[in-house]
Image 1 (cartoon, rainbow, N blue to C red):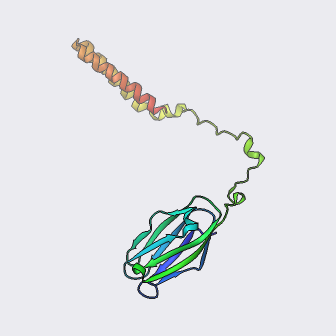
Image 2: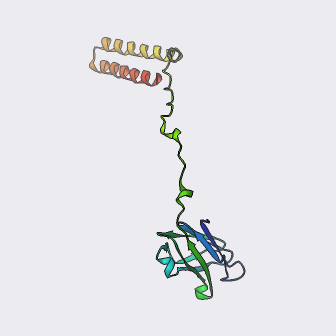
Image 3: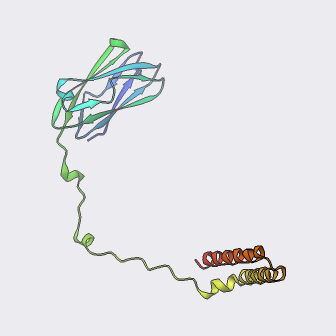
Length: 184
């Protein structure tokens, strides 16, 4: 069944309404107010039978020129039937649509499940560990880091300062972090 009820206004003249005689749904649906001319106000109304099982998000709608306005009709219960009233031009034109709301077909909405879904699926193989080629590719960086470490410790011994030794520790921690990310 259709999920959208198209309503054309201003197609054959000012305030003119063009809509199907009947509409069927089995759940909430959308009304598409398509304006083919000048800006217009449209009023939508569900009769008493339909308003017991369905509701409109709003009743009065302004539709800009050559634009489409979508209005949701929320269905709470089924089955039901009744009329949707469409009014334009503050009563200048009126049209009615016979609306049938059917019981929802659970078979149509169901998804068939077979026995294979109950069996465990194969897991993906884990990603390979980094090889020694990754270390060889980054060997110049490793050697440069070791040289910086030796240089920092040497400066700490020559200067005999705690600040230089702290700098050496910072370089050592930086090397450890860099090695971790290189081998990931």
